[in-house]
Length: 107
Image (cartoon, rainbow, N blue to C red; front, top):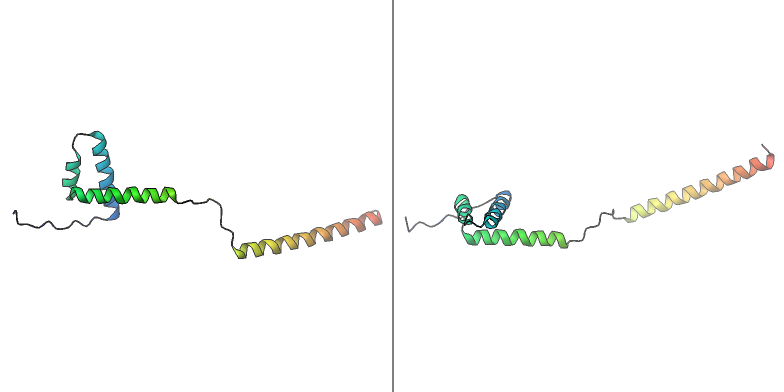
């Protein structure tokens, strides 16, 4: 049995996150339960180190990414805005002319 080569454990992303969570809780309790987590999942401490590093780097990258909640304005949006503005300006001019005529006639 000592000559057995460990078969590499292929964990899915969700499983890796679960391993990270369980190991983090085990570390916080401080009773040496990390080894239990490793045995449960059939991985080595180097695998856990790699998973931990990946999770932490991913979290940092997400925190560093500056995402705006504002909608990005496209050239098409600007063109539509300008057309709508011009249409509204013409409408206001027409209404002002009609109002002037109504006032002249005394209606």
